[in-house]
Length: 339
Image (cartoon, rainbow, N blue to C red; front, top):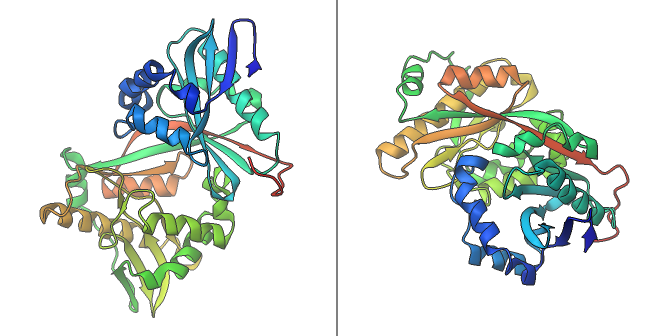
């Protein structure tokens, strides 16, 4: 147990403690979509408890005020020692940022007991963006993220897409559906495309080819959502993969572009737009053929990546919201101990 002040206490979340915060968790679930911008309602309380019981999965902390649980922090230790801070939920707005800081400090104190972590990654989605001024006091840096959406229920997106004009593909190039044999070369494309991007600041897997392979594996294995190989577009030149636009389903009605990348020699030639256009067309065809029921396609783009934002706009995507993404690097990380 960690004493913060006379009125606030933070405890490590375990299975026993999870049984005492049902009302608090249900309060979060009722607000997840509206206040935290979740795309679907989170897991049931019983499933949440089972996740806590599996010690290698979901972890967290609970904050008490006068012995009453008033908030919690949830995180997961991912591969490459990335700490995904999934959520900070406080039941009300009273002294909210002081409580958030107490929870984050408890996490950092726990992590600093060992150096086996590389970065803490924390997207401040929804009402969490009000923490943007305070979290840098704990050493975090920020990047801006924008969620862009192509909505099939909105007249504007399909109209822009219908009138879209793209350049012809060069001789020798073709756009193919995903095949497992593309895995290694597609991973090289993703590594080259993202190793210097803002994404690598909070996900160091992009910095290495092996890490990029791990990300591509998670996409194609369906860990990030149901993978759609027939809608994933691959730019091929004489058997070599030059670009890729992955597509999956994050839930029953939302399709997502988790990554799109082009090899450097083919940048600024319009191939990214061609791949994205082809993938949107394939999703539309799958909807018409009743293979999926998507009502939108979305993607996440850095707010300062103007070429990417411009590409999405020309296809018919529109910025739906922006949010700050906080990250903290561990300058003294080692890999000798486990968290």
